[in-house]
Image (cartoon, rainbow, N blue to C red; front, top):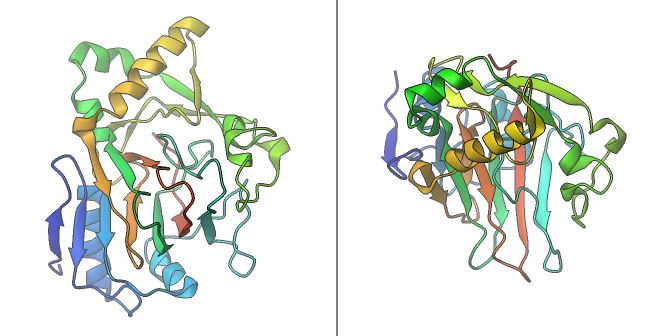
Length: 278
């Protein structure tokens, strides 16, 4: 297999990959090496890329079929592309708060691929948290208790009318009447490629745990969400124009910081379809 030039971002997860032009026609061996690093490190950072939307989509398709977001309008020319824009007068940003992308889907996306078009002079970093490490750090008794529990996920808190993600001036939501549906996923999922277990609940979309009373569910979710985002399990990516980051939604949560009020930030996102968590 092709050897990549990798350097770690942090002790918990993440790696920078050097020496690749993602806009070029990469060999199958190189894609296989990127995929292996993706599964191992969960977050990969590629600097100094010059990518058109077509090139970003082409790169994403090397890892699977691209998805379209059910509740956010895509680019008018490329529906699979979401232009994630925060304008200087926006009060909120898109993606703020710890979450795993689209866990409200029956088959949540495998991974996300985000490209920086325009970034603020300072701020706007993204945090990532390793959900395998968060699970591994639990006591054996807690792991046994979580085994077989099912989390209930919904897009409603974010995308139903009045939801948190409907207040962005540059981000257009759609199909709000469908956002309040519920899907069930295991509280602990097994990664289909590595076989590792990971916590699979998040504060944005996990609304309850099936089979528990309301207060039991709320207390356990609070504990698990706090466990999932402890600093020791995290890394931080500082963006520059031309930075591309891909992350494994089966392994991580992320948090787009909003500490750049009065400045513009424009990112371009594509996602790769995944399978049903088990």
